[in-house]
Length: 184
Image (cartoon, rainbow, N blue to C red; front, side):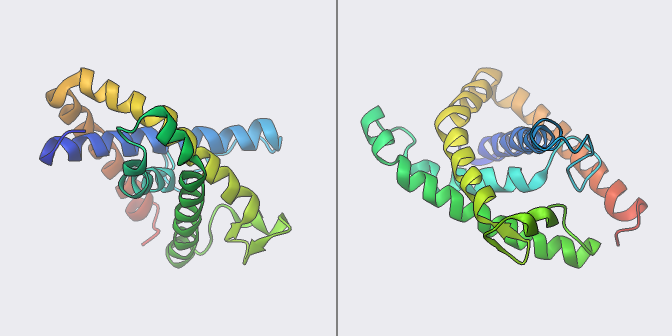
């Protein structure tokens, strides 16, 4: 991974990729698994769910160093630890996000967690937490090496341009959502 400013641009791109993947995952669950029909599952206008981006960045900072650059045997031996850490980190982020969203909007999108047998205040639940652990393993073992290779092939200049575009779109969406829609 790049150092300094180059690393920041890569992280912005990773954040965006994972936020989009998270949105796609949420829509897939809603449409295909639960047959509820389509709605925008994010709190913002765009096709991304930032909580997934924040979760992925937390995985990259706190968990990925356990497996990055290690041989296959070491990576596989650490899989249970990676799963548990991803599960705990994502669940913690989800809990914090539920309180933040409740404070700013009056609710949070996953209040359906009350339907799960094991849940805490419909904010977090065991079943989604297990899925987050599995998703974290997939992110770190499969997707992150691919995203690093893509950013490496693009080069620092192109990644910087891409990151700036993503930041501009995200800032405009936040402005629209929080100011123009009247959340604040």
